[in-house]
Image (cartoon, rainbow, N blue to C red; front, side, top):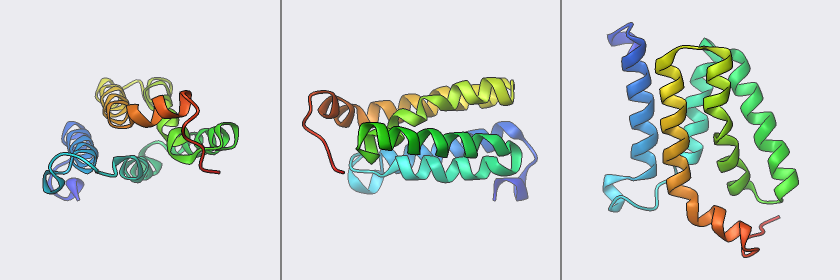
Length: 126
């Protein structure tokens, strides 16, 4: 949708990031209880047009972590950490690297209680 208004990569990066932030901290839910992790992978699906290997690597890494950790939400959260690294190696563009770092930080902040619960052994869903 952004591409229909502008060819600016910065605008695409900003809008993609704001969609993720809004789904993590929804204004309609009092800035809590959002579901931004799924939205993040939805935005990453957009990357398949721009950078085909990113989606493939992100899904493989997330599924591998799901089998290792036996917990889907935590595994996909940890897989988000690979996004900045993938963007560094596959694009080298500063705006996409910034997007990857910012997205990983938002997902980390949102899912920190899940990560801590998993580390303490309180969270096993499979």
